[in-house]
Length: 380
Ligand SMILES: Cc1cc2nc3c(=O)[nH]c(=O)nc-3n(C[C@H](O)[C@H](O)[C@H](O)COP(=O)(O)OP(=O)(O)OC[C@H]3O[C@@H](n4cnc5c(N)ncnc54)[C@H](O)[C@@H]3O)c2cc1C
Image (cartoon, rainbow, N blue to C red; front, top):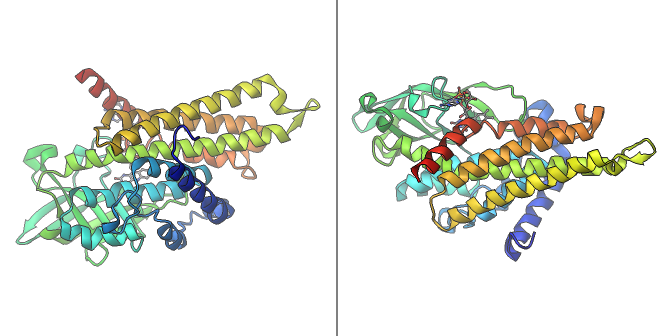
């Protein structure tokens, strides 16, 4: 797509495609079936710079922008949504929170190993009573001299078991509502912080999702991110960037599902013809291709605006809700084009379908994206 990406971006796209095809594709179903989080990929992901895509080289990153980031996540999602989701969560959530709001000391200690791929990052906003409504956070952090005692739990945390570093928010002043929520950096060496139940998910099964429990976990005040009470607003800003990566992941999943359907439609013969010769199938393929292109354009537009330093709250939400809903529709049509075989695990269509659904939920549901967009458009 030369009109969308420059020469260098096309080369990055190609190299990630080759990596995904050779190192990920052969294992996709095995990892999915066994819910295996492929931590063994970490050295290769690190060598390609994929664990520090959007951070400057001085912090161990690859120094790329959001257009490159979106392109990389799309290519990973085209082959395996789970690996795409893991790379996206590691970059946009935990690492980016430290990059955006950490002190120089915190960046050196935590961001550098994260960006170099020496450690995995997790990010904890969601709780049992705080899903779409993050202001419902119940985990508390109580001052104890130069430290904080954190108690509570977080749900649905990507990399909760394998992470070395976790950024999570806790209530530091209940009387101030969402202005009384503060973010902290936790590391595996701290006692009183442990992973709990691993979720048995419908899709994205090779991306590790589990709860985290804090039991009087002592966190030094030096691990506080920004000022007290800024955690909620920081999290909302982090999600603006993260939503671009979920949009890109959706485009990738849709692209993978579409390519599988296109291939199959030319191979499958019924009534003496390849099914691709039936107009009903052609119209499906046309709609799929058209919707993916529109989703990709919205995603790259949001990425370009982010690279230009512009506010992307509306554009990231638009890209995310549009692309994720396209991914679900396209993946479903891919199953349909495969007929009964699409409903089996012998063909890739069903996995794209299962994986796609997460994109309408994680980092803010479609309903919440529409609320975000409506708020922005009504502002004028
Ligand atoms: C695989 C996976 C990975 C995840 N990774 C992480 C992670 O790394 N870190 C993290 O913090 N979280 C993570 N999450 C959590 C995810 O962000 C939440 O699941 C999501 O924000 C929705 O919250 P909820 O599940 O509590 O749903 P709820 O908020 O309970 O929503 C239920 C339904 O009500 C709707 N709804 C809620 N409020 C409104 C409203 N005001 N108007 C209209 N409709 C509304 C929702 O759209 C949804 O349809 C992950 C989730 C999954 C499944």
